[in-house]
Length: 89
Image (cartoon, rainbow, N blue to C red; front, side):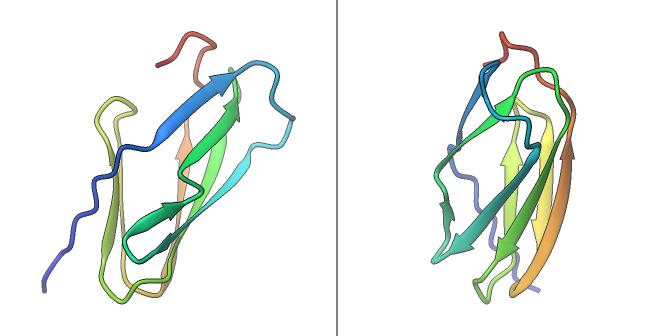
């Protein structure tokens, strides 16, 4: 099996003024995340749904967030992010 790892700098801005919604959807098309930047509410857990529309297996990987998720081609994966403080970078 050939694992195509997609390690993309994903800008994550944590703001206290965001809406109460803690659900975010990221879509992978042509090896790119859409949207390229997401915002989550500070101090609130977030559920991220990762939809892989590519044929290849893709990976969401963030060292700073300590998160890794591998999603096979044409499938969907879910990540549960811990609450981030307002000062998270």
